[in-house]
Length: 327
Image 1 (tube, rainbow, N blue to C red):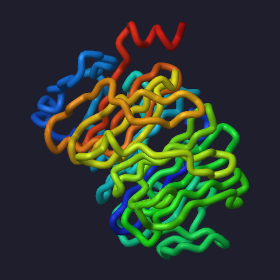
Image 2 (image 1 turned 90 degrees about the horizontal axis):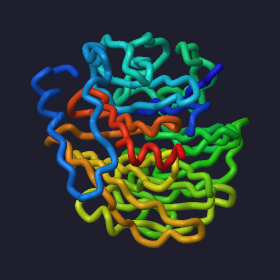
Image 3 (image 1 turned 180 degrees about the horizontal axis):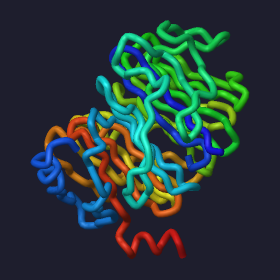
Image 4 (image 1 turned 90 degrees about the vertical axis):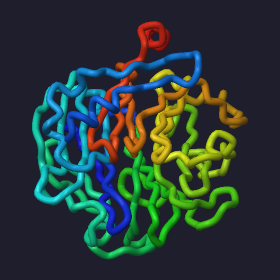
């Protein structure tokens, strides 16, 4: 049975969801407006799937996080608000399956600072951290506004902890929750952070962190935690809020929240970080605010949680690109 992890943060942060076994709308007027997508470069890789989901009325709160269970072809959406279902479950085709709300704390509230593991049907399995108590301790583990986590197939967990709280750190845990390594200092130098907001891992063993406040992406060796380099030349206007890879790992897909923009950046070869090179982009309407995103490891579809538009939208690869990573 699949298991799922959530970061439940306190004031000034949000809840984040990731899937263990994958690689790991309210206003009709607004929704129609958001469909006006422009491509800034000549190479068009993705198009909007205007039929996803089949029924948007299930989005009743601020949709801030989305995660894809590629193995079971499911999409999990997290939303915040009072008296609403906090987690919605859809098929990748857009059909609504179920919702659950049990023991999920309200993000941006005064209660949280934990990371919780759930079954796919919402049963609480594990809690890390002290509910309602922020902190920086490692034994026992404490958090303050954890932003997001990424779970490898091995069960190792990467956590970015510090969306405006006490901590600005990246932690790697083993599957039995032992701290393997961490970088945990606020600052602008190598391996220091200012609002680390998203984290992912590639097949070459590199950990990619959206260091949002410092307007850069930092890269680390997943085994040793060694700092490998950073990208900042693509983010002069605004830092990245979310980062994921396409299934072929040819591109990184990066969200910029306040610019309402998605970037497709060429991934560097193994052994080199180099410089950030934008290949394509999607400019969304003002105030859509793409917060966090995830990518299906099987279809390459991108699901974007738009906190301003209060919806999740799906982008699918064009046939020529899709066939290139399935050939």
